[in-house]
Image (cartoon, rainbow, N blue to C red; front, side, top):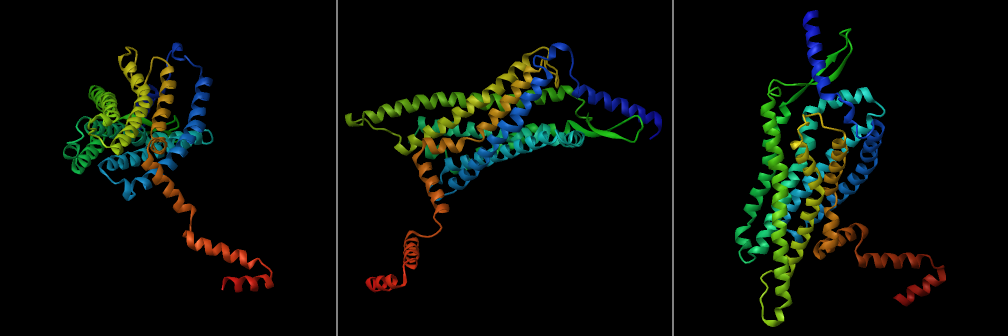
Length: 384
């Protein structure tokens, strides 16, 4: 590469990098730079890590409990898939927090590393787990809706095979929709004027330069992976709430000869899954609304927002999504006796290392061995 070609390459690459990272016009700063830095630091270095720690421990325990024989069912299959996905989502958030914190100590090195990994992590791996989780919650809502509306035919409609197909679709659909994001940017070296020192920057690939195509990809992704699951969960929960009210009223009239078509265990698990769906709805709706407002904003032009209030809103909405992936185990414990019993048994397995009978004799032996010799002898004779 000669000097002229090198200078052209530098100008082109630097311009692309500046377009991506620059902050334009004074009215952009609704919050000052210092306020935004404090906002980021608080969430990414304190609030989010605490949420991640709770979520990781809770999801691991949920995975163990859901694999126990007493809880195996078609509903459990979806809950296991959701637990696995939530764990992956929490771990991706952990990686984000680690890299963000490391930037305070190794800014230049971490910026180079993040730019190197952005084509994969930034637009794909950080995103995909949350979208899979959204679809799985929609599947749970639909399954519960079928149980409530047609309880006598539910086992015929919602079979193990149907559950497995829905889980597979929940994983494959985001993979298909988000795969173009892996091909949008590439990492490049941005050389200084001496042509020796460089930084890692981002540059649009040949496919990424087709902005019309990526606008369509973005809109399809938001519609299919955000708006659609939220709408499905909302409609299904309305139907479930009405159905629960109807079946609860039926159970109250049992003394009058009415027949309740749903068992008490089905009613209980339905209430648990309804709470999970409602928590999903309230924790993901803020991010969905921000995206909707952003898309109708005439001054929005990715990656530039009208102002940095959008950035602050996305920080909070990201934390809410991680919170949603972290608290399902608390819902299981609080709202369902079967789950609560299985969690207690799991904890008792770890707390009791020896069987009760063996533990009893062990304590006797210890107490006897502490007695004086003469007392030991008389005690032994009494026991004999």
